[in-house]
Image 1 (cartoon, rainbow, N blue to C red):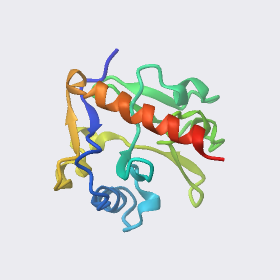
Image 2 (cartoon, rainbow, N blue to C red; image 1 turned 90 degrees about the vertical axis):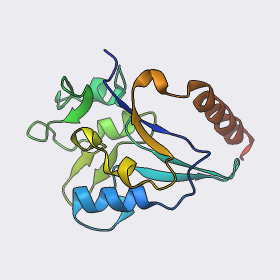
Image 3 (cartoon, rainbow, N blue to C red; image 1 turned 180 degrees about the vertical axis):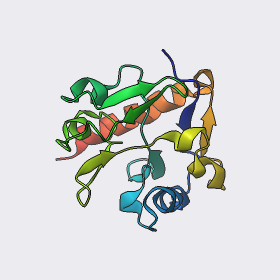
Length: 161
């Protein structure tokens, strides 16, 4: 089933200010520390663009499939992928299974963490002054642009030694 809404990114609008990272870490970890954010801004030097990366709440979520304790599931109300910490043993299998690198790991608490869409009101979207982030219907996602960014990224990896 397709998510009700998804977090989308327009890398052409992102300036790399990292307000999204700070807001997320303050909201979820009560510290201003981008390493504790559920969103991460990546600098693609090849394209000279910034790209915020967060959980895509995949339809066939690899993290969910990989979890040996069935601690990751799809929450029906917002169609988001969530972690049940009462089942999670901190094995990091989900962390390694995520193809987007969106799953993070908190070594102090010994558990993974990821975007939970702020219960349907993503703070990163609200505070993004450049409107690079949006929380929108999946049919509004600019797939051609996303495919082009992936193509450029893939070709840049092949060129590096």
